[in-house]
Length: 156
Image (tube, helix red, strand yellow):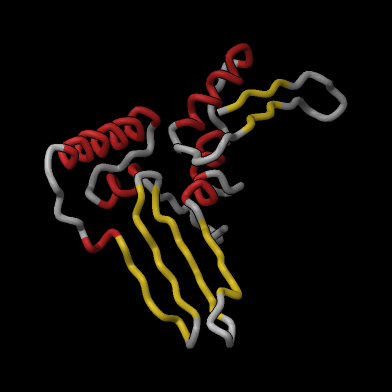
């Protein structure tokens, strides 16, 4: 997904920013996640009251509805369309990872222009990518300018 001219974020860092604690630096992103982990741990000690604002759902048209659920990784969107027989005819999902790792998303934006030591590039990039909390395995490929052959791959 893309929103021209914008770098949308979702997840702990975005929620911290909405609460007045911008999380633009790696250590701030990690702190935002740790804060949420601490909050989640308090829920384990008793039955938490569910925050109804974490789920938004609605009808868009006849047989077409959506839901957006705030998850630890970020907002998870679902779109469901029913056919004339009432069976699911269309189902779309947009996961937080799709926003975080899109070409104009926050991870790519953080990497662009970052000062990264060539000798530790793979490790540094893997660490940075992990701060954007991918929900699936990600492969990092580091290439060189055209005509050169050195590449490396790391998995997050």
